[in-house]
Every structure is written in C-alpha cells, then in structure tokens.
Image 1 (tube, one colour):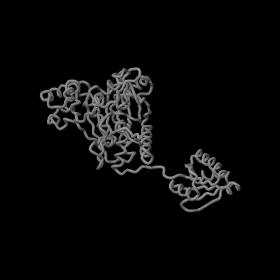
Image 2: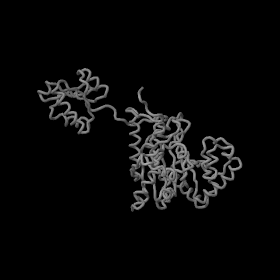
Image 3: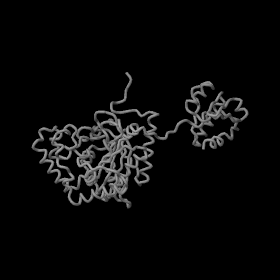
Image 4: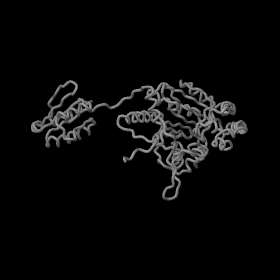
Length: 423
C-alpha cells in the first residue's frame, strides 16, 4: 500500500506554488516599506511558552496543540501560532535593548493545530504575521492595520471588511469581567463544559464559544465598550481617528473577541466579502497585547500584531478571480544532436543560466522533432540547434519560435547574442 500524506496537510505543487511565492514576495516588499524585519524562529518550542503566551483557557492550548515528550522527557510543542515564538525571541535576544524602538518584526512559516480539516484550515498551515514591540502609541495600532490592508490591496483584493473593537486596559477588562460573570453565572449550567470552566478563569472567552454562540444570553451579554474607562476610551478614539485620516474604512463591533488570552485595547479582524469565499470569512486577526512580554519573562513592553493564513489568502484571490504575474515559458531551448554536440550543449546551457537566461535541454535522448515539441510545451521563445556540422563550423542555429526566423550565430558570440535578445 502506498504511503499517503497525513490528514490535514497538503502538497503544494508546481502550478500552485507560484501564487504562494507571489504572496510571499508582496508581503516582504510591503514589510520593507514599513521597516519590519524578518525573524525566523524554531518550528517547535517548550510547551510552557504557549501555555503562558497563548493562554491556558484557549482552545489552542486546551485542544489543538501537537505536544510530545522528547528524549530528554521535556514537553515540546509544534508552534500553533507565531506571536509567542516571536516575543520569546525578542526577550531572549534582548531586542528591547536596541536603540531603535519600537522593534518591528515579521514572520512567515508553517504552524500546526490539531483540528478538523476544512477549506483554508489545515492541521499544518502557513502563517504570516507582524509584531511591533515597544510603543503604546495608538498610531502604531493604526500603522499595523494599514500594513495589513496595504498587503491585501497590493495583491488585488477588493472585497474586504475591517472590523475593530477595544478590550480596554486592565481596569476596564476587570469591570467587564465582573459583569460577564454576573450575566452568565445564573444559567451557566446551560452552556458547554468549556464555558463552565471559563466562567471564573476568563469569562470573555465564553463570547468566543462556537458551540453556544446561538444561546440567548450571548446576544444580551454586556459589551466591553460600555466598560471602557476614560483612558481606554480616549485610546480607542485615537485609533479610529488615525484610520479615518488614512482613508481606511472600518466597522466597530463590540462583540469581537479574539481567540487568545493576551489581547487588550485594540482588537481587529479583516474579513473577505467575496461571493463563494466560504462560511468562515476571517482573513486576518490581531490586536494589542500589553503584558505578553512580561508573561514570557521580559521587561514591561507593549506590543501589537496580527497574523493571517496564506491558505486563506489563496482562497480569497480565487474567490475574486484575481490574477497575478507568473513566469511563463523559457528564453531558450538548446537542441543537441550527437555526443560531441551534447557535451557542448551542456556547457552552453550552464553559461546561459549563469547569465540569468531561462534555458533548458533534453535529458531523455529524444530525436530532434521530439525536442522541438518539448521546446513548444515549455513555451520557449528561441531554440538553439547544435549538431556535428554546426560544431565543426563553430556556429549555432537560433530560431525564433513565434516568427520562424532563423539566424546562424558564431558559438563564441552565442551567449552575448542571447543576452541581447532576451533583455
């Protein structure tokens, strides 16, 4: 029996991988303009990092992590998200001590969560995210949001909706927490066991429950915006003012609760409104997380960030029928006939490639006619034919495949000729 790919994973093959490469290219270009630098962290970390950094009451930690013991009996977890690892790297490498602050970082890589596979949600998925650490300025919140919107705009996505909310500071959240406990406690027995366990630990997580989202108490739960103190309210108003100044449209949703425990103040999601995108519309999500750096062992450092799955961006591009530039065809296909010509063809092919010219040759011993068919399948602009006669005369016959025009070029001038015609 043939070995098959594990459930919840996928092979990204030629023909599909090009759109991934394009997304990654745009991501890197936009991050560069905003002065965000790439960080690469291990795929696995000590389990405690995610227990402390993501939160014990989250579905991620409770149900979805790939956790195992290594040979040293240490608990290790495949990273389920990128923020905790990035903040750990920030703390461990003392990036908070660098003279230029805030520290602006981005990451791209595979993440792992054990959940039911569905379109755009795999057990191994690929996430891009940014983290800006070291500033409490609400303008930084707006910048992070603008960066995300800019990426989607550069990719050609248009049918988007930005939704924002504020979870307030610790004082505001404590007041809201007490109100939530009072609201849900009399009827908490009607909720799932997860919600019952979260009532005292983190009642805000009840609002994010998928099982009980239709319960009548969900619709009447006290909204966090009603409990913002003066400072938190002023902070949120500044974020909205900055977004408006940049011409970024948004909606305020007081029920928006991100799925991680570390958020406070600004939280947000970017959703696709493209027809046929799917029931789960979220493309990106994030927020401010003052306190996370301290939880991981660093100094008091505010931060804000977001993440999005590349799989879901691919789905959004497909839903909006968005095109992207691809490298189609090759510049030159070298046709060689005879052992001596074959030896020379290998040399010429290598020189073409060293000069940035996309080139190919036959590796299956095909006849000349079949080699020309291969050149057509590869959409070669030129074919260069080299046989024993041409080799003896130190020339090569170059044919433009579209026009049919042919020209005989001296072998020692061939590379320069191809450089000229392919510029």
